[in-house]
Length: 228
Ligand code: GDP
Image 1 (cartoon, rainbow, N blue to C red):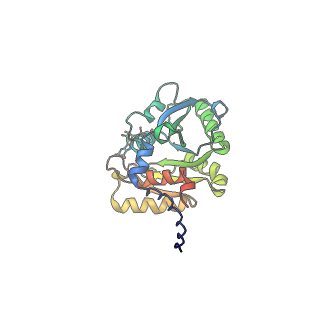
Image 2 (image 1 turned 45 degrees about the vertical axis):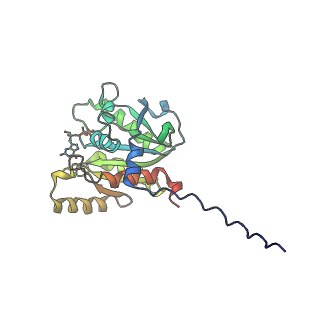
Image 3 (image 1 turned 90 degrees about the vertical axis):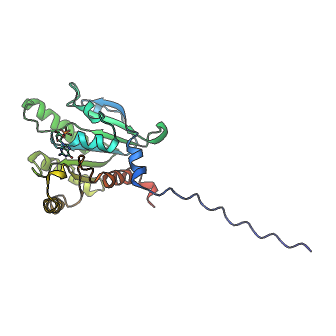
């Protein structure tokens, strides 16, 4: 009599690599220019999660994007003549395989811009934020020494219905190195009250504060299927 062979145990599932800041930053470092357009209807319709960076001019948006992607010139390309009122898209994804899009929307409120151009740009932005189908998250850059401007508040009103439906919102308080620790905590709590449905984080490119935290959040928002 031969002993019956015990059934094979099921093969263990491949373990997911743990999400570390290095993974998130490595992913952000893959950012490469995709396209630019002066209006939403001239942008390609895309299916990948899209993360849009917005904020008043001089808020520190370009520095934040360059710091997160570890590319010195990436977002400054959006400040080149001809692109200052364009939606600029960058692909993200390892091995050249795009799995998300970073959208850089040039800053608003710059005093020297003629009124007509300002109004046109506000309309383009509102249209993009309200109707861009694959938009998954908005990162609003704010210098906490100035707080939310009138245009920031209008933008928050415009996106509120989408945030209530699940669009992610992150307010990044830039240049945190300019504040004392007590001022930082104060700015955090004030902003948290002002943007109820959003996440608020302190950030300093100079002091390298908040970089890991913001990178990890963005990675998680762009890869919701791996969160289970
Ligand atoms: P943008 O117009 O929103 O793209 O702003 P920039 O990224 O061009 O930054 C505006 C100014 O703020 C520049 O002079 C930057 O050097 C400065 N800045 C940006 N981030 C920081 C930061 O984390 N700390 C400090 N101290 N200055 C910053």
